[in-house]
Image (tube, rainbow, N blue to C red):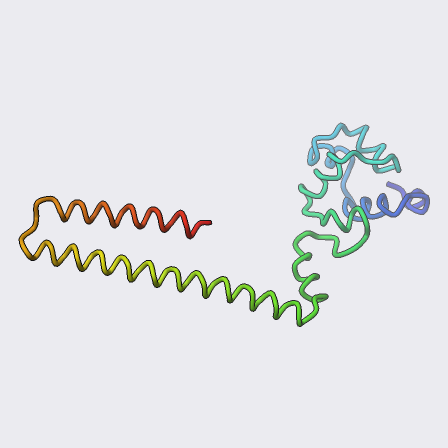
Length: 157
């Protein structure tokens, strides 16, 4: 990966060199699962396969957008901070407001569900204290269990 060649390389190949700086073809081959000779050809200017680009991005946590276009940060771990730094404050506030609305709706559904459970439990307790113990305790436990199961599935959606 000589310096003289980097002047002749396409922009994506220069970014590929920057991402893989100091790595040998053999190391890149082991990391990506691509034959060392193929890696050498890619690093010297041949258009790389989608599999190679994907493996490089995955194994080295490289931002694929940066590698392919030069836009954004090189490291995938820096993408979130980059987008937050460049985001319009109004967009951020709108996203926060939408998230708060969704959370509020979920809390309201949970409160309603808890009220329903409390009603079922208190009516089951009242029946049990009235002497109606011919399996009603077991039936109410099953109803509560079905209610919880049904509610959990709905909340997951």
